[in-house]
Image (cartoon, rainbow, N blue to C red; front, side, top):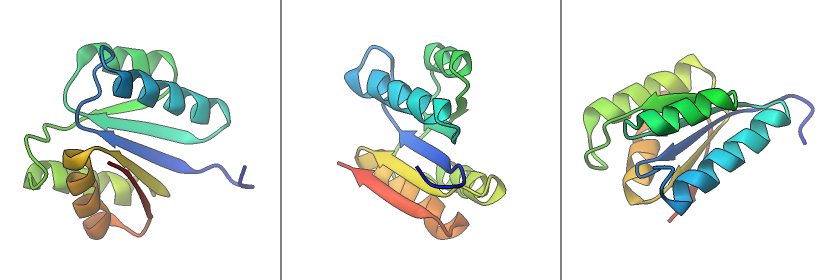
Length: 116
């Protein structure tokens, strides 16, 4: 683990708790938070996921992400990256990858990890 905690933002367009991706994303975020990192999870609006995130100390950001080139989602993500001094953005899936890439390019500098 690094000497100083990281600020990590996971971006998942489809992260319902009914899906494996959503459950895995939440479990990973919870584990990182327990190790002292600041963790945020961005997904399409999902009240159940937002409540589960709050229970484990993970901030949830609802982004519409109708497609990977949505300027509203990219802009909000860029402001979050810049405003929260995010160290790592981890994107899961094609839409999240595009939105996260735009957010990092406009809000950077930070590391971008992609799972596709």
